[in-house]
Figure (spheres, rainbow, N blue to C red):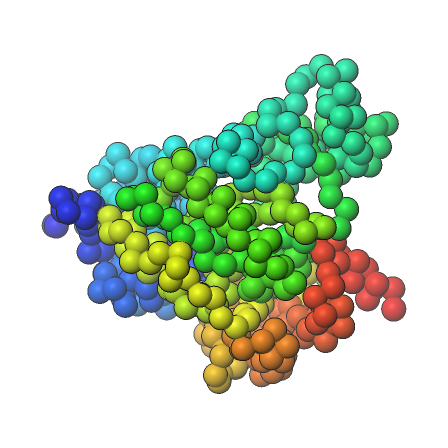
Length: 463
């Protein structure tokens, strides 16, 4: 069996095989990047995914547990054992599951594997919303008004903090994510009940009752800046994207660039992001998430991993982000400077979910028929096929349709055609909902914020 890791003094850690500690469309995406780089892949799977095509397409694979994610894709010991048994040199966590788990990153590195992502210290710093905010303030990144400390226990002190910020405020779990562990407080009389409920939710969901408070912006958009950093002090930002189309804090449609944001406004923010990365010694890909209101940016969090919506940035920037992520993990310096980044055209991504388009309840079952759109400017990232069994055990995402065109209007028209050409039989999907959304005039005109989709859905239900 080959050694999992060997060193090259000129370029740092090198490897020729990657274990993909994930499933679904992102496993396929990582396989494609590895294949293009001449890197072999190892797949791990649960019992539910044993027959998946991406498992069979890997150079090697191991089943690591039963269908439950807690006993398979979240089982750190099983994944590390699989890497050791298959001779993998590196581990790519994808997104979700263990991708932002600092303990897993640390365990992988200590076991002799390259973790394709930032080091454990960076993950821990940016994973805690309070320490992340503190680091961003130090780097000059604009933040939402509010202290960079956890809420105290004393009621009077909490009341004064909220009063100083000004209502409405939002209470958030310090270790939160995925839209959980947050409550909006419109007035002082509701503050303490909101804190008590959120603190208990945070304790149960994230293992920590720590909370913080910020100003609640009324009509912001959700805008992200993608960064790419190597181990040699080089860092670039790859334009920006808008992720405001959200339902229950979950993104549905993303686009790049964010419409209506002037270059002179976004450029200083992008530079502040890469400067922050240099200050904390960040390595790999990452995403700075902001609220944007009245031509001002406010940092909310950083994702220390590859994101679901990375394709819209790939298509506008003309850069394979996953390949760059892997090369950085191999110790190679970035071949790009900020002057090389020249984003062109416009891109949309629709998340295709196995769910009822009205109730949004998950839909499991066997795919009996399938047609994907084709043509210039259309890309489909997926792992499903006719005969594939959609499992009830995991996230409902089954595909992403991504389009690219010279202008936003043209990209929107391309997406309309792509959605019209898509057919998934045997289960329910959110495709009818997406088709309707792309016919909405306010969305087409870019006149939306993070609350728009929820209001749009409510209005549709009353008609």
